[in-house]
Image (cartoon, rainbow, N blue to C red):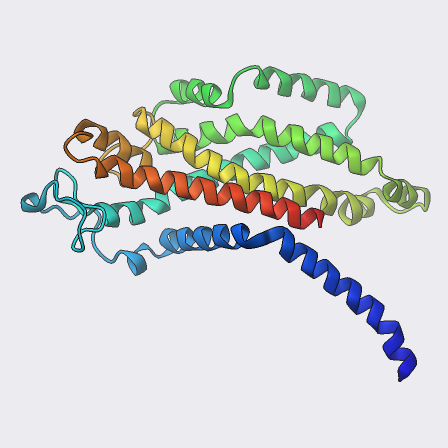
Length: 288
C-alpha cells in the first residue's frame, strides 16, 4: 500500500498543479466575463426569462419616459420599453455575430489547413490571396461586400464572415506549419504512422484550441462590426431590436432621450468586452 501511495502522489500533485495553473490563468476577470457571456446566452435562447414583455408593444402615452423602476432603460418614441428591446435584441446581435464568426472560421479553417499542409505552390498562391485581402481593412472590406450584395441581415453576416476569414486563415496557417514541424510530429512520421492519424492525433488538437480562443475574441469584434453596419443603415433596420439599429434609431433623439442610444451602446460594449476578456483567458488556459 505504501508503494502505491508513493507512486500516485507525484502524479496527483502534478495534475493538481496544472489545474491550479489553469484556474489562476482564468482569473477573476475571466469568471466575470464568463458570467456575462452566459447571461447573454440566456438572453439569446430565452429572452422572455429576463424580460417577459413584448419588445414591439407600443404605448404612446409612455413615450420618452426616462429610466425608472417601471422602465429600467426608459422608453422610446413609441413608448416601447428599451430594456425589453435590448434583451430581445441580444438574439439578433449575438446571433448574427456568432454566425458571421462561424463563417469566417470555417473559411479560414479550409484555407489555413490547405496553406499549412499543402504543397509549396498551393501555400504560395493562398498566401498571396490572403495578403491581397489584408491590404484592405476588414471593416472596409465588409462595407464593400455589403454594397455588392445589398443591405440586410443576411448580407451583413456573410460580409462580416468573409471579411474576417483572412485573419483566421493566416493564424491557422502559421499554427499548422509550426506544429507540423515540431519534433513529436516528426517522430510520429518516422515511426510510420498514417498521415490521417498524425493529423487527428497531433496536428488538429494543437492547432484548433488557439483558434477557439481567437474565435471567441472574433465574436465580440463581429458584434461591433454588425452593429456598425446596422447603424449605417446597411444591416438590420428599425424597428428591429438589433443593437446597432437601436442606436441608429435613437441618434435622432440624442438630446431629448439620451437613453435610447446609451442602453444598446452599453450592451454592445459590455458584450464585446466580456468576449474579449474571455477569449484572452481561454488562450492563457490553453497555454497553462
